[in-house]
Amino acid sequence: MGIISIINELKHRGYLSPKQVLILTELASCELSAKELCKKTKIPLGRIYEPLNLLISQKLLIKKGKKPCVYSFEDPQHKIITFMKKKFDTFMIDENKIIDMLDEKTPPKIELLKSKEDFTFYLIKAISSCKKGLETVARHGSLPFIFYLSNKQDFLKVRTLINTKRTTIAHTTDTKAIMVYNAYQEALEKGKYFDAICNEETFLWHMNLIKKHLGKDFLMQLIKDFKDRCKKYDIKFSIIKEYLPMQIFITHNTVVLFHIHLGVGSGIEIQNKETVELYNSMIKDMVKRSKSVDYYLKKI
Image (cartoon, rainbow, N blue to C red; front, side):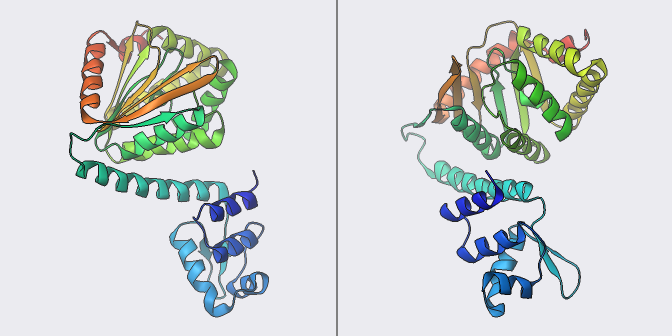
């Protein structure tokens, strides 16, 4: 989908005003001054600065140079992703406040996840809305993102390789993968913890895959980056020999379960503290039966 189509979709969804759309459409192809924008958009000079300043405050535009300055919509894809992430985070904050205000005896709120796209949305939602951190159990065949976040370039190399070698649960495009990557990075920078459990066979398969196709040096650098992140952030990674049939994500008030079979994904999101406590107990028992990832990394 082209940038112009995306801009129009944002207007349709109510995220941009008609004047903002006119401005972004013109700036999608070149940088322009306010007067030049007025000529092209037919917006009077006295009325163009309000939408311009709003677009700047929303980090969709940047203002360059001295008078007469020009306005730029460079790297639009990144700017739109950042813009939507901020909208998403605001929504999550508001939702969490409302949930916390509800009585704990309120019946669980359950949402159905009918596709891989749903899973991507609810995963980002879980990462962004967790107050203290996130616990995750990766289904058999899936390597937790937290292991290979690294830098964006290397992250995408690993992600592209994985997409070509097995069926992935979601985030099959670079844009979706980067959105999840950004959500993890922001959460780590905010001091949130991440505890992950992965199946032994799955972990070793991915290590061999990366070594074979990207080289031993790349794998060793990936491992070093992971160890550095563990020192810098609150990350725990455990390996278990048991078969893990589904993806599980647990926050302070939510459990997300997702399963994939024959390429079709489905799952549920449950917002209920008793359910969270139940799954937290399950995770603690699994950790007792697991070994730290360090045990396996020493053998690579």
